[in-house]
Length: 114
Length: 423
Image (cartoon, rainbow over all chains, first blue to last red; front, side, top):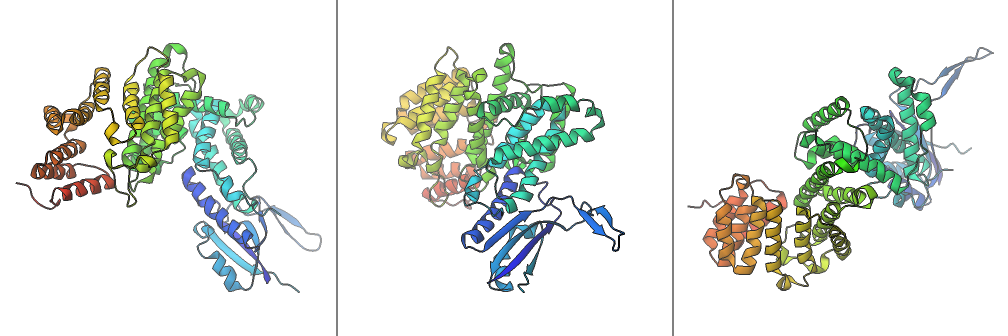
């Protein structure tokens, strides 16, 4: 088994014009997905990131800090899940029909276990 | 480590978002004033979006409703801070902000006050209906449009106009004083009754949003019945009527989703808990001198509900109750229902004669149940040709998909198909 990080990106506004009932239905799909992997013992960790942030640049004492360019970005990282799987193929099978694909994209990265 | 807890999926009770949306909008708008209804709606929508962004990762909070209330309240404060015109009020509002009080009674007061605003008699009827579903019910514009077979743009327009009138006429979000309660309550009950009837007609059909209207009507009537300000006979009578009718919904269609006649329904599938609750409210409805059409209609539903089988239904009692109803609320639709009951007492010929007397009423000109009833009575008389004629006529009038299938099934029993031309 290897560990995989699944990063969810999106504007966060994909569902802003849906009705409360529709939003709950979307949420239920997410929760069902999470519950499925958790019950199978494959969900190791999950975190939601706040939308504001800082970008730090400048080597050799010339550090500059800017507020993250997140508000304008179409593909903000909203959160991530850390999964356990045998291969990329298995992770991709987990992500088939994932509700987030209607709201943005998912990036999968295998954890480099040195 | 915030992996969603095992109870997460279950923690999202059915309609949590929709009901919370109605409660939060009512709470915030009551706090900000009816002129800021849009702001309240925006804050609530944002809170729901936040939940959608956070809960898939962080899990459902222990108190989801309180979480939503708190986020919506903060969001409302943010929006107020941005509004120059309101900035001066911010200090006062922040100080006066009630902590998210999600106890049922406090929420009920907010929802009740909001219902009275939405159903204010000075608003156009269609606006009252749309506004109640949107703000108290938590329905989306698209859902309201689907429920009333209207265009979303038309519903949005109605909402905009109704809100403008509320601002211009300064209609407050408050429970009316006893002096004006009667007329205001009548308007609220009228709107709830419409929700229920629309939903009941659609139940079991393809249009699930329409069917949800029944549940919403019962929920809102329950809020009225529980509140000391509106714990009144007419409220209990309407609630009794809706509960007794709703008790039959599980038995109203067969496994294929086709409508069943009352006489064909499996009474074991009626919801006996709802019947008991309905009878209880009917009893409470009798606690005053006031008799409303809802009383008579609930009493009719009760006669059906308490009969052990089809043969023991007290039809003469039902005919008398229809007479009471006609005295309170003359209507050709009620006349039609009375005629059907009369046929059960005196035979199909009496029913047919009674229907023929009201057939020409313009109110019934597009009403599919009139020819459908005639079809049923002629079928009982054994005149298949005439029965088929009436079922074909019924099929030319507007009705839901299950109703249509029912009519086609009846027509087939007469040995005809809808494609045949009648001479």
